[in-house]
Image (cartoon, rainbow, N blue to C red; front, side, top):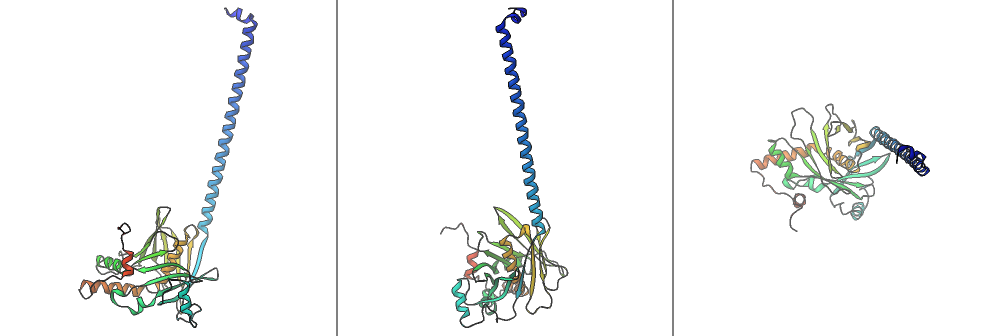
Length: 314
């Protein structure tokens, strides 16, 4: 069939017209679909941009907001926690962690209210000698519920001190109630004379470690330390007050780092500052006596339990 005959045939003309109309409809549908997809893509990009901006604003707000707390060290035991008839026995009944030799020596104040207290095992520190002398600090809530503990790891400390050729390197284990991981806090052996000391530790967060360093300030009168993260940013400060009877620290942590576990570690660390010089002296003396054969090494069972292999056959 020729082209002229096709034009004259009404069926062919009708078919061509139908094909053209179908093509126009298909084209319009494709264009409309593309327009809809473009609008959806633009809306998605806008939503993502808003979320990123919101997250950025939240992160910026967290960086500018600080968590503050104060720690006041008491000079005597005449306080509302321990002073009173049968008060110690009642405290022991509130928590198994409140042992018979527990001595409360400081309070934690947040937003003007006491939120916790710090204590240490007096018999282990004041009355014991040699390898039996250990520093054990504990953090309790205002109602004396246990929150966290900090133990001087004498074996680890002596090992590090001998490795540092006599420079006292104190090592502590921190056990916080809401965490599955033990936090190990250690004094750095990289210490030059007249230079500030450093302590380091890390926290596990969703399977990832977050590293921190506590550096004593160069200008330091009241026991001041700066909290530094792995990137070298200053994210907290422990400001020791001058001219106080027992000791007082004003502490702050940047909002994006104010994890409850970190706050508990810092509270215990501030409590440790009051014993820091004595702890260094004790570890240094023990390392020297062991090196000279004066003392036979012996680790207490409570500390030995902290060294147990978690994969051992039970």
